[in-house]
Image (cartoon, rainbow, N blue to C red; front, side, top):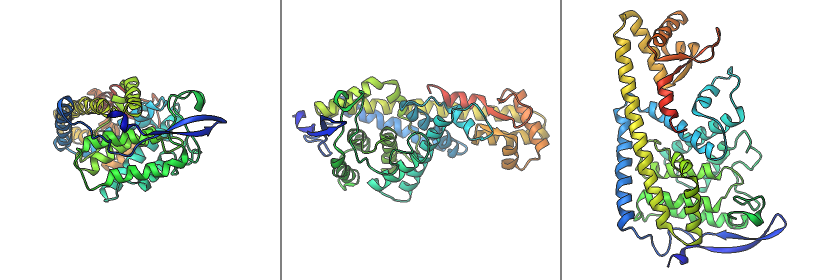
Amino acid sequence: MKRNRVGEYSETIAGGEAVRAFVPAPLPPQPAVAMDGELLKALAEASAALGRLDGVAHIFPDKLLLIYSYVRKEAVLSSQIEGTQSSLSDLLLSEFEEVSGVPRHDTLEVSNCVAALDYGIGRIREGFPLSNRLFWEIHEILLSSGRGSQMLPGQYRNSQNWIGGSRPGNARFVPPPHTEVPNCMADLERFLNEDDKSLPSLVRAGLAHVQFETIHPFLDGNGRVGRILITLLLCADGVLQEPLLYLSLYFKQNRETYYELLNRTRQDGDWEAWLLFFLEGVVVIANKAFEAANQLNRLFREDRERISSGAKQRANSALRIHETLMERPLVSLPYACEKTNLTFRTAAKAMEALISLGIAEEVTGRARNRLFVYRKYVDTLNEET
């Protein structure tokens, strides 16, 4: 029965050699996904974990603090899967043009990933549908600069691509011929927007991610857009109010299993095995994100209490600087002055108070143009990146 779900192969010429390119069957799989037993249990656990994560933003003094940091964490992890060496610290440092020694190509790609996800979430909130047009717009932002900027940003590919191997003939997987991409993506768009929502949103997200990866419609950036699609669908369906799920960590940590299960959907039609893996990933990452959010909330509260216990005049200024570091965990003094309306002298003294408490740390070692990091905040976010 599962063999009926696998699509078909199309003979095509790529790189001067004949290859068999895979054209997936439209979603949803037929026969339908068997939502029972272990898979139904995994869905219930994933839904509960996602619900806890979605509610955690409401305990924060400002949920934008979480969104700012979690979007960047997902962008860093998603880009690392594609081979970048940039860390979250590199990304934060790169926001200050005067900083040297940061890997510019890598951080540029991560910055583009942040912008693409932010843009996609904004469009979804405007009521814009999950569509080919939205994929083009996101892709154009993703490849607007950096190493992929010559790979048709905002356009589906006009040639054959392949995954793994040195040429199409020895590739691990060959996606559909470019002539089939418009039809495949039209089918995916219909699935994403069909009125029948009998499949749970998490299942639809898991199915859609594989289908997008299988079609591989762009010359570059498919993995990043495919992972953004998961977040957009969950937000569009109201399962997540904010983009707090960074599944790229799970895919990165289980890379070989991830690729093996993608191929099993194509070769054997085993969507159930993939969905079980996907839902288990949602549970793992949602729980990690929930714990990290609570840890950050405790950190902010305890540090504010420590600051408040000091001399009142200096504590007031230090609390304002601390608030700025909560919003953006790496800042310069001019930036802190702009955000707090404190004079440079007052802001500098307040920052020194935070340093003496072990809250802030100067990271440049320079006398001028100094930068200060909220160390424990960044360390918490940096875990496993």
